[in-house]
Length: 343
Image 1 (cartoon, helix red, strand yellow):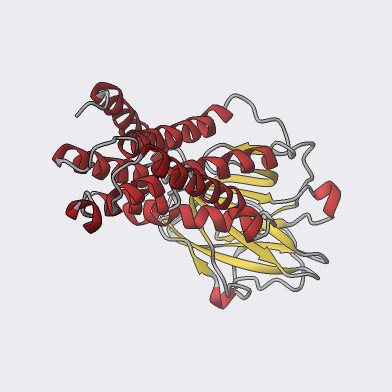
Image 2 (cartoon, helix red, strand yellow):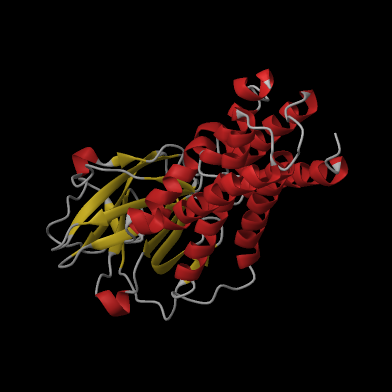
C-alpha cells in the first residue's frame, strides 16, 4: 500500500491524542425548554460537571429556572453570557441563586417565584467592554455576570435568569469539572450548529460553507475521475464524499471563527480552533490519497484505514457526520462497479 503509511499513521495518531485533551477542556451543551416556572425548573444533572446551557428569553423579558442538587461544601460556579453585545442590543440579563444559608438575602423582582424560606443572591448583569472567544466551538460571547461559592449544606438550590423588559439569547455556564461522555461526542456536531443558531445565525448561512465545498468538490471529482480514467466504484465515490465532508466542516469552522472575531480579540487560544481545522483537512487528505489511486481501492489495509478515519473523525467531532459515515460506508462497499468488473 503505497500511501506514505508513516505520514498517514502520524495524522491518525495525532487525532487520537488530541481527542482526550479536547474532551477534558470543553463545556457540554444543553438546550432546555419549558422552565419558565419554579415548578418546572430544569434539573442540571451532575452540577459539578461543566455545562453550557443555551436558551432564550422572549421579547418583553421573563425568567427561566434551573435546579441543582448539591452536597454540603460542593462548589457552585455560575457564569451568565449573552450572544450579542449588551451595549448594542440592550439585552442585559441578571441571575439569582436561591438556597439555604447563603450569607446574604437580596430583594428580588416581584415576578420571580421565590422558594419558601430560601435566601437570594442576586448578581445584576454588567455590560463588558469586549467579548470573549470560545475556541472549541469557534464562537464569541459576552460574560455579563458570574458567581462562585460553596453549598452551605446538602440541599436543592435554584438558579433563575431574568430580565425585566427585553429578551434575547443567553448562556449559563454551570460547574467546572470538564469532560464529554460518548453520547455527548456523537451529538456534538449537531449541537454546535444549534449553538450557532443561538448566536442568531440563520441555518442556511451556517451550512453554506459546507454546501459550497461539497458542490464544488463534487464537480471537480467527476471531472478528475473522467480525465484520469479512474476505475469507477461506490467505494471511491464515498471516500471522496468523506473527504469533502471533512473539508466542509473545516470551512464552517473558519467562517464561524471570522464571525466570532467581530466580538473581541481572538488571542492565543485561537490555535485550538486552527488545530481542529487542520486535523479536518488532514483527514480529508488521507481520503484523497485513496481516491487518487488508479487501481481499485479497498484492499484490506485500505478498509482498515477508512475505519480509522471514521473513528478519528467522530472523536474530533469533525465532518458533520458526512465525513465519518461516508468513510465507514466506503470501507464496506465494493471496490469496483459492476460495469468495471465485467470490463
